[in-house]
Image: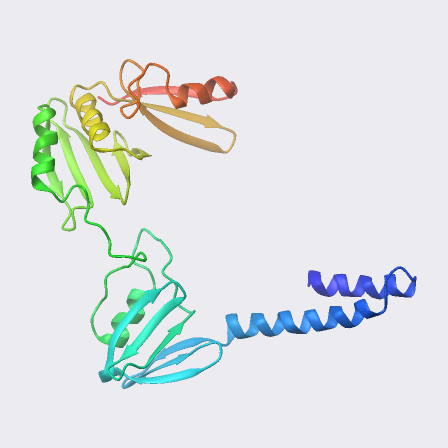
Length: 260
């Protein structure tokens, strides 16, 4: 609609002698070309899974796969790729491997086409969770005698701990390099931390010194973890990134909530 409005204005500019008349022709060529691209990429492609066949309509071509001949349905950088036993393949833009907390939509398509559910894919094989190593978890608990393990998910992506003295739970979720820390009354913060920083976080939590510092400013809010002396578990110094942020943003309202 904006392009059409611009083209309408160009007619006035041409009538007033402010634009060369060739701009009208160029505007129509661009409008039609742009509409064709949008139609071919957005509205033309589709995937149809039937009882015996899978129809994959791409931007420029269409292929019909027999369901019993399909050997692979996996995402690529350009979309969902279908491969049959003869080596025939076609990639559809319809299903992308977008990140989500739940499994992406292409997993449902793969299950309908292959009869079995594929695992989510992130452009490469998903690395194992850092919590999958039993010995690693044992070393962390040895360094934090006030904590005990109360559960771990089947894929080791979520590790749950309990501070025995108070019954306070701590949940750590592996986000491929980041750890989502959930504690207290559902307060959570995402930390990019290494093994040493994770060990310090568990130690201060085991001692009951972990504090959740909340901030609110207008429509925004957040949470940051510090220990009782004001040092972030992943930055062992008195002044933290959060403190400097508050100094620059004096309008913030800050609350300190001990995790008891």
